[in-house]
Structures are given as structure tokens and as C-alpha cells.
View (cartoon, rainbow, N blue to C red):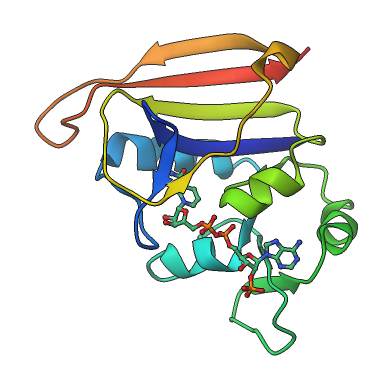
Length: 162
Ligand SMILES: NC(=O)c1ccc[n+]([C@@H]2O[C@H](COP(=O)([O-])OP(=O)(O)OC[C@H]3O[C@@H](n4cnc5c(N)ncnc54)[C@H](OP(=O)(O)O)[C@@H]3O)[C@@H](O)[C@H]2O)c1
């Protein structure tokens, strides 16, 4: 099974200058809980946006065109085919965690969407590519808790391909 796991603001924004545009620990916890169930695959820029990669307790795969790229604890792939071949033995979900090029690459393959909507408008430069939501059914929706550490109203949604 292939999933997408991401957070976007009310305009579909996901990134700003190589980082997340917001600080929302509750979403980081949600992200961790979801992705701990499987492997993670990401683009090289998303990998570089993670402090102290790889993501712990998960097999990490990265896509890059750079033949010389290497990082301890990360399996480097140079094509979607290579990612699929290297993860097919694992009987667990493959979580696609961005960025734009990865979401584009796997959009016909994805079975489940884990979307966090942050009900705010941020400044940034990277937007989620369009998803045809008519092909998906919303199976779970939960409002996040707003508190001192999590200042922005947010909603966790889970969609399943129809
Ligand atoms: N809000 C969220 O949930 C979320 C999630 C993920 C990322 N982000 C944000 O998004 C930004 C980074 O994402 P991005 O979209 O700019 O970049 P990205 O998709 O993470 O990385 C792009 C890079 O991936 C490699 N790549 C992609 N497709 C490939 C293919 N088919 N074959 C080989 N290599 C391939 C290339 O690396 P090379 O250039 O090395 O060849 C490409 O430059 C950051 O701001 C990050 O914080 C946000």
C-alpha cells in the first residue's frame, strides 16, 4: 500500500525556503505515528529539510538524480521503479512524504491520503500538486487541539481511494 502524508495550509502551501512554513508539534506527532507503520520515501530536498536524518525506526528511501549522493541510514534510489523494487518485499505501507515531485510521481499509485489542513494562510514557495479528490473517500476527520504550543487550528484527515 502507498500513502501520502503531508500538511498544507488553506491555500495548499507546503514549504518555504526548504522548510515547513509553520511550527505545529501536534502535526509532527501525527506524522510520526502514521509513518512509523511503514517505510518512508522522499525527494532529496525534503530529506535535506529534516534535522538529523534519517527518520528513526523507519526505513528511509530518497530519490535523487545524483549518482554520488549517499547518507548513512538512507537507501538512495534514482527512479520510481527502483523505489518500488526495493520496497516490494516489505509487507508494510510505503509512505510518500514529499515533496512536490514525489507526490506528482506517485499520484496514480497512492491508496491512502493522510492530509493535515492548517486553517491559516502562510507565506511560502512550494505548493501541493492538485489531487483528484473525487477518486477518494474521506474516511476519518478529526480536529486538532489548539493550545499554547499548537497555535493554528488544524484538522487531520484520512482519505481512501474509492
Ligand atoms: N508540508 C509538508 O507536508 C511537506 C512535505 C514534504 C516537503 N515539504 C517542503 O517542501 C520543500 C521541499 O520539497 P520540494 O518539492 O522542493 O523537493 P523534493 O520533491 O523533496 O525534492 C526534489 C528532488 O528530488 C529528486 N527527485 C525527484 N524526482 C526524482 C526522480 N524521478 N528521479 C530522481 N530524482 C528525483 C531530485 O533530486 P536531485 O536534485 O538531487 O536530483 C529533485 O531535485 C521544503 O520546503 C519542505 O519543507 C513539506
